[in-house]
Image 1 (cartoon, rainbow, N blue to C red):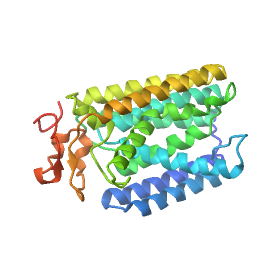
Image 2 (image 1 turned 90 degrees about the vertical axis):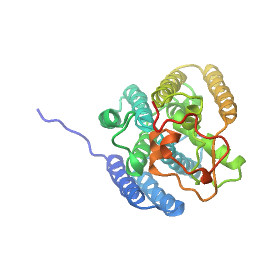
Image 3 (image 1 turned 180 degrees about the horizontal axis):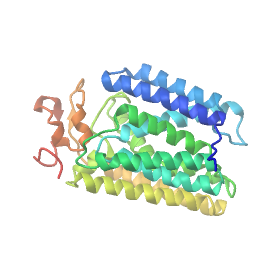
Image 4 (image 1 turned 60 degrees about the vertical axis):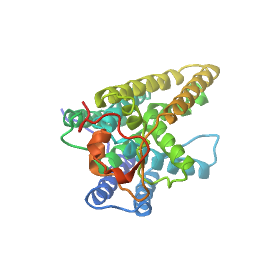
Length: 309
């Protein structure tokens, strides 16, 4: 018995695009890439995906708008997964949950190839999480987070969501809602402060929850719960009427706004202009960063522990 696997053009595009992301991430991990060269590298990978046939296709939209949405979606998700990687087990676990929900969608669409790739990615991340959960001994780094972001963004695009109602086009946004929300929230806070969007800061949702004296595992599990809930809402959205889907989308949006307002009120230490966060910030413990007093403005960490419990 032979196991056959169809190496379609889009699969090869994913392989090449993923390879480009790993190479770009490795360069950034061993040095420091400026934002613009990093963005150009991501755009090249997205161009490869588009040329291989992986793109958003909405019947009511002109081709140029579909292409624009594809670029925005892919660049957004690639960087969202990279941005959320600030705590042991966070990005990897959220990635696993995203893979599993997209796996269900692929099965619904009878797309075996996509389902197999999602299962493989989920399995890889589960093995990685064994050593990445707090206290972590290995990390995704830019090479890992950029690769996972590209795979999730691309595989989310190739599935069908709007068979029952057009509102379900928002389903992939909900499935990847935790990294999307964190990215939009961080960008909003930086914009309010007049800071560049690409500047590192301590404004991430996970780090804000740490200020409430939650442990790293508690914050991570809460994020997992949010990912499961949003993925479930996305799946429900695919099979209900248009009116019900609109109500569901409205409820999710309202909850997101309420959460953003509440999170914004949590006071965070501010970094003096020009400060670069060290790799220790990946542990999710503000204390582990051990920043000297002269680079912090405002309230300090939630406790004096060297590492989160």
